Length: 493
Image 1 (cartoon, rainbow, N blue to C red):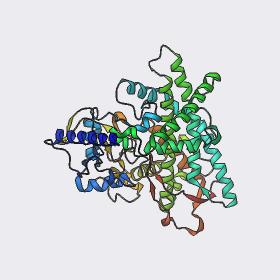
Image 2 (image 1 turned 90 degrees about the vertical axis):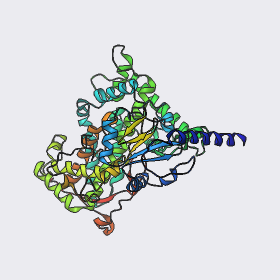
Image 3 (image 1 turned 90 degrees about the horizontal axis):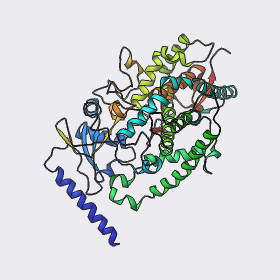
């Protein structure tokens, strides 16, 4: 019992010292919070919405304590530009993260790695070798092959007038594409632990997003009050065995002439003494997980939201189908080479990413030194959270911000590549998502194919206006209920 009181006394001392160090400095406005726990209680079930509401009271640059951690929340395009462009280098750091410590091999994955030479090395390898335009194009036949399988399944359902669980099917499609790209083959449920591949990956996603008290009150991390650390250690062992098995298979059965998957590429760097990338086994496994998690659920989630909006807004669906008929025709399916000519499809995807970014809150940045932003003092080690969801719904930046209206992008040069701070679903600056081009390709291709090949209606007399758009917060912002619809094949047979 004595150690508990000693720990609480130590935490209280840390809190007091933090308060004294910033007492006479102008921090951004924000809620005061409670001793030790700060404003953790305000986050609720949907942190992106709770922080958005607080920002409406305190402003687009807001300070609050989450536990003992000084945290800055950024909620407008102008404020985001200050942190992600003007002072980009200062805020390029990443804070310690308990989940990444266990699941990402000591934060070796690029998403959670500290800014520095190691991160720059990994970033270059990913952008130049794994996610280059040439490499993405090389996987085009694989993407079409997997998408063809889905279309054939839906065609059979259309013949029987059977409803299709689109959310589940798109999720499986995305997982299969990701596995073939990263590992070279698809994995069945029984290939990973008795819980199954999908179940284990869902556990990884859940644990990565779960609020861990140790991240906010580091002094009590070892106590593991929530039992999360125990679960992280358990799942990391399962993943480690699985990833080692994959690497061993690639070492033993390397096929000459085949398109190299990501594991093949990284193994070639490990074996060569002349390459510029310093890749060890831990770094390799962390990158494999980064690529898998980063590509699986994000693309599927965006497609799910986009299709839900299209069914909820029949006018937009009909307009998109008309564009597809004019550009592609009804004699064949959509090909990737068609995508650049589908302007309205591009607007639909932009509007979906504005209202429903896969990651509503960016992975927290960390201030690497004291900094003054907009006359506010930002202390070193502060966490910086960019509320992408709030920026996409900022009424000062967008007319009718809550309305799904793709035509808002007609004649506009706003894109999602990080140049326009009104729309940053993939981030921007040094920490922007390197998989953006791959993600956009998959989202546009799958969405175009589903809209072009089929008409859709809701089962059981459900009206388009009754589509449930309730969110479920996590590492990605999913819909809480699966989208189920009845297809009718519409191409000329």
